[in-house]
Structures are given as structure tokens and as C-alpha cells.
Image (cartoon, rainbow, N blue to C red):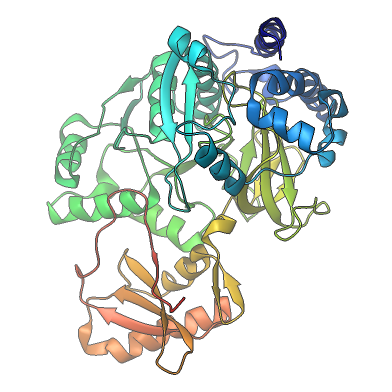
Length: 475
């Protein structure tokens, strides 16, 4: 590739991104940050996607060695992918393929369009995947990315009802946690006040809520449950606090009915949710709106289609599923200079609906939200299920504590079993409680499990993103 072609394709890509960015500095209406985009017709959204896609493919070909090698390996050229109808020609990219690239070309891999030259010129921030399923993948973003990130997140936050006059208390570690960083920058662009909550324990955060009275708190659902109980232990009632909006991400919440009910009862406020991932330009991809939980169940989540192309595929061959059928999420990002991935397997299970939402937004919605990723699937004795399925069943039993563990073990006779560990204050009723939990799981998940009932405070409390599953089976 020549330097001139690299620069020309980058310039054209940045010009295309800028041409489709509207209402950058302020909302344009009472309900929508970018009305013409948020309520665009299906034909208009497809037109935006096709325009961006035709410019994206040559940009990736010239600026990412990963993509150039992949085009050549598949016997394809950028012109082969000009519209969304052409996307099926391009096999889905999964995390394993990115990991292989990161191992072969350390430390950053070649799957993004961020060169060393660009990093020195306008590098903004570096993030990484968790590495929980292998080698951590590094993603570096430019200050141009930051601007698009702020804008996309502002559109989503505005849809949740967050406005000037609110005070937001985000409670993340502010390490490689892309969600919290994106929220901080978006709120600054919106002119919304922030109390930074990194580097505090739960008691300190509870004191902040009591003293400084934020109207919005941002954390994982698991941490919100933990923090609420800490506040109660300190003699404060989260239900009567200043918090009007509980803003969650990192784990499913709205889509798990019993978890949602528990959070709403504990905090007495509205629950809103973000959805996204580090790989595909990690601004908000999915978000809730005022109508998300007010219309017919199940709940729904908007996906921002003018900046991302969303597809659903089956979990075996990664082929497109028919309309109305559940599948795994695949995303093509159309809002990034550094990481505009082409058909990346995000891998969350959901179902799509293209009908107009009661809020007026026209973008596709994930019906039932996103309840878990294919990476999290538990496969035991031929039965496959997500931790969120167990969570719904466990929290259907009255009195069960917020924490629970899922242990996978192998018995001496070689049989794999699932053990669910829960907490309950009534230790004189252990057998009854264990039976109730086992019956709920049997009824809702169609699997037999063993149940251990522990005294409250036994299980490790969730400070950030919960890790419920421990696989101790013989390999």
C-alpha cells in the first residue's frame, strides 16, 4: 500500500463521518438530541449505512494490515462490499481471530487503523478487553474518536432523561472500563454535573449519596444491589435517597425481571441501561428510552443504526437468522477513526424488532434486551443455558440474598453437576429453601441442580462486574 492511498482513504472516511454527525454541541429538541437521525426512516438509515460502508472498506484495506490480509485471504477486494446486502460475503470476525492477531503481532495487533504515527499525533486513550477468554486485546483511540464517542453517548443519555440540572455519580474503577470513561466525557459535553466516584469503597460512596445527593448513579446492577444493602446497614434507606435514576451497564438488568424488580424496589427509582463492547468503537451501541419498560413486555433496547450496522446470526455457522428469531449480535462500527470493525461478533443473545418505538425512535430494538453472551454459555450434561437464566430463577425465591454462585463440579463417578450457592437469613429452614431454589431452576431452566444455603455475608460481595460461574470440572 502507498502512503498516499492510506492518507486519501482516511481523509475520505473522516469527511464521511463528519457529514453524518448532527447536533454535536446541544440537543435539537425536548425529546431528541438528533431528531433527524433518531427518527429517520428505514430507507434513510439504510442509505446512511450504505454510504458509510462504501467508504469504510477501502479505508480498512489501506489502513489495517489485519483487514488487508483478510481481504486477500478471502480473494476479495473492498469494492466487493458496497452495501449492507454485500455483508454476507464477509465471514464474521470473532474474538479468537483477534487474539491470534494480537499474539502474532504484539503488543497491539493489527486489527485497528491506529498506527504509531497516528498515536503520536492525536492518540487519546488505550483500552483493553478483559482477557478472561484469552489474551487481552488492546484498542487505542484518537481524539477524533473521543469526539464521536461523546456525541453518540450524549444522544443515548439524553434519551434516558438525563439533563442539565442533574448530578451524576459514576462509580467505576476508571481503569480500562470503557463505559465509565465514555459517560464522563459525554456528560461534560452535555454540561451535566459529575461527582467522580472512583477509588472509593461502598461506605464512602454511600456517604457521598447521603451528603451530596446525586440524582443519577452509574454502576453495574450487581454493585447497585450491594451498595443499597451497605446503605441500609449504615442506617440510610436507598429508596428514600436523592437518586432518581439508576444507570447500569456491564451486566443485564432490565431484561432479567426479578433482578429489575429487586433493583427498583431497593432504590425506588427508574432503571436505565447501556449496551456495548470495547471492540466496536465502544461508545453506546444500545440504550433504553422512557418507553422501554412502559410498553408491552418484554423490555426493549434501542441500537443506534446510523453509527453501527447490527445483525443477528445463529450460534453454530454464524449465518443470518430469519426475522423474529433470536440470534447472536454482530456489529459493524461506522463511527470511529481507529476501530471501525467489519462484522465483529459481539455475541449477545437477543431478538430484533424494526417497528417504531412508542418514544418515536425508529432504530431497531433488541427485544428482551441482551441477556448474555455466547462466551458465557454454561454447557452441562448436554444442556446449554446462560447465567442470567439461573439468576432469574434464584431471585424468584423470597428472601434469597443478592449474591449467589454457580459451581460446576465433577463427582467421583464422573458425572458433571451444577451447585448453586445462595444466602438466606432463615437457617432453620435450609432444606425448604434449598428445595424451593432447586424447583425454580428445574421449572425455569429444565436442569436439576444441588443447592447450598449459606448464612448472609458468606459469599464474596460484588464490587464491580459480577463473576458468578466457577468451573471446577475435570477437564
